[in-house]
Image (cartoon, rainbow, N blue to C red; front, top):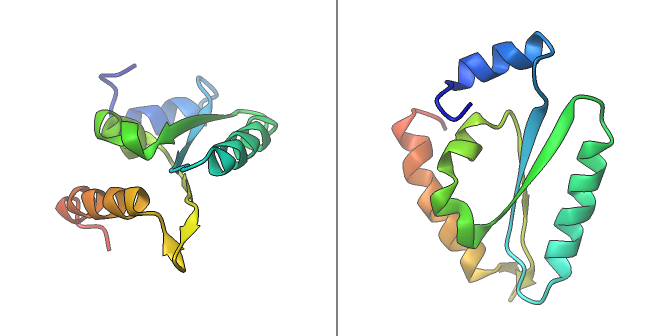
Length: 105
């Protein structure tokens, strides 16, 4: 399945051949946001035909294909000094190159 294109995966899902995989990208400094991400994943899995993939921001560099294939991405980050954590901001900045290369706004 790793060699399938996003379109092929979408077609498989449309034909009922596989679950819709929702990506949940998060950073958790002390474990609280990780617990919230796990709760969101449990909720996603309650939907018939849906599955969730938990991706800590520290692992995203190895998981761009998962994000590309996901029809939806849910983000989670703790708030430090009135904004998201530095690790989450670093993920945001690294994802901008991938998004702009595809022409997304």
